[in-house]
Every structure is written in structure tokens, then in C-alpha cells.
Amino acid sequence: MAMVINTNMGAINAQRTLDQTSREQSVSMSRLTSGLRINSAADDAAGLAVVTGMNTQSIGTQQAVRNANDAVGMVQTLDGATEEVVNMLQRMRELSVQSMNGTYNNDNRDQMQSEFKQLQTEVVRVADTTKFNGMNIMNTSSFSGGVLSVGQISAGTIASAAGADNAFKAHVGWEGGSANRIGVALLDFGSLTSLTSATVRLMSGNPASVTFGSAVGFASAAISAIDSDLAAISTMRANWGAIQNRLDYTVSNLTNVDENIQGSRSRIEDTDFARESANLARTQVLQQAGMSMLSQSNQNSQNVLSLLR
Image 1: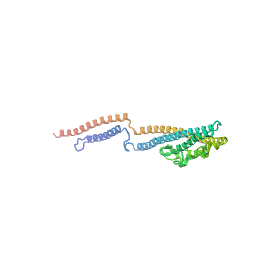
Image 2 (image 1 turned 180 degrees about the vertical axis):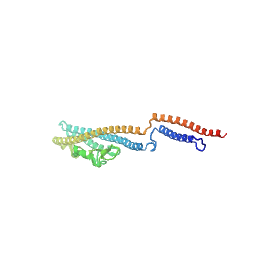
Image 3 (image 1 turned 180 degrees about the horizontal axis):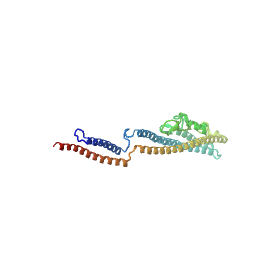
Image 4 (image 1 turned 30 degrees about the vertical axis):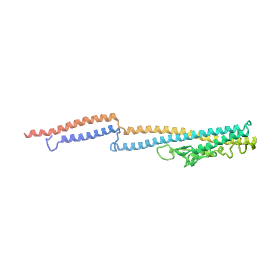
């Protein structure tokens, strides 16, 4: 090999190798510092594209889980208020049965009617004031398209109401589209037939002028109206209970999907610390060796001087 001064091939080679080692060392340090294998598109362009899509799905799925849990909270709020309405209707029915007994006089029935009317008023108040996040869930004011009246309730109408445009819908998917929405049919409690105080009552007018037969007729009509309302409410509550169970399974599925997506994303994006720490140690040794060889290459040029002495 010729001995030259202007071009030090050993030093050039050492510099090139050192530059490559330094880049590898920088990448390893970046990965170990951030905990991510992909810190820029240059690290893994295809992997970054896949990870971006997975992150999009994961973030959307996590929000869908919150959406479903919020919907469960809404249905539970509705069912809890309905339970109190049922309790009041049961008390109204109890008063009606009591009123039919011949051991009570019309003054007693008038006293029963006082409580009966108060309960009717309270059911209306509960229906008008029970809200979830400011939206009324017991009448037609917030979700007009998916609210049924007492006389409309059947399996077919409940399904149809749940699918109506203006019905309450829980969005439980990370993408758009109707397949990711669960509709909930609601009940207009203002349509309960037992709340019409002009026709559903235990006593009317002057108690002294009401015959026993008329009083029994009032109570019988009240019982019929209350039984009809209780049957309608029971059907709706069964549907709400089924929806709660469905939403629970939805949440379970979403969390399982998100767990697997996160695992897949981690295998692509996250740093393998064992591997990168070993690579960092390797590049550090190579860098030290490269510096030594660069110094040695520069020293070799001095050997030419011995020929000029």
C-alpha cells in the first residue's frame, strides 16, 4: 500500500464508521429516553402508519366505553325514578281497594281521595323534573321521536321507537354509522291513564250525595286504570333492564378489543429495553474503538517523515 499524506484512507474509513456508530447510538438513546421504538417516520414509516391507525381506534374505543357507561347511568336514573312512580301507583291502588270496602263511609273515602290526588300530582311532578344531564327522560320534551305513550306499548313499537331519528341513542363504537348506536325507547309518564284526576278518582263532589255503589264504581275504574299503567311500565322496565345488560356486555367487549389493540400497538411502537440497552452498550464500545483507530490513522501519517530524514 502506497504511503501518502494528502489522502488518509484509514482516517476516512474510521470517520465513516464513527459517523454510522454515532447515528446508531443516537437512535438507541432516543428510544431508551422516550420508551418508543418509533420516534419519527424515519424510524419505521410503515410501522408509524399502522400505529397511527391503532391509536385512532384505541382512543375512539376508550371514548365508546365511556359513552356506554354514561348510557347505563342514564337508564339506571330512569329506572330508579320509575321505581318510585311504581311505588306511588301501588299506593294508589291500595287506597282504591281500601275504598271499596263497605266499612268506610264517604267521609273516609274523601280523605283517601285527598292522598290519592296528591300521589297523582307527585307522579306528574316526578315525570316533569327527572332529568339526566339537563335532558328530560320521562316525557317527550327532549327525545320526541323515541317516546311512547301508554297505549302504544308493544314489542314492535318499542323496537321501532328505539330506532327513530329523534330517539335517545348511545354511541358505543369507535366509528360512525348506525351499527354503532344503541337506541333506547322511553315512556311518556304524562300519558299514564291513572293520572287523569277528572276521571280516575275515589270520590267526587259532595261525599254525602255519593252512593256506595257509585263509590265502588270509582274505585273499580281507578284500579283498572292503575293496572293498565303498571302493565305498561313493567314492559318498559323489562326493556330497560335488557338494555342495561346489553350495554354491560358492550363495555366488556370494547375493553377487550382495546386491550388487544394496545398490545398490538405496543409490539410495534414501544422500545424493547433489553435489546436497545445492549445495542447502546455495543455502539459505545464501537465508538471508543473508532476514536482510537482514528487517532492511530492520523498517527500513521507521521511515519512518512522518517523517509525524509
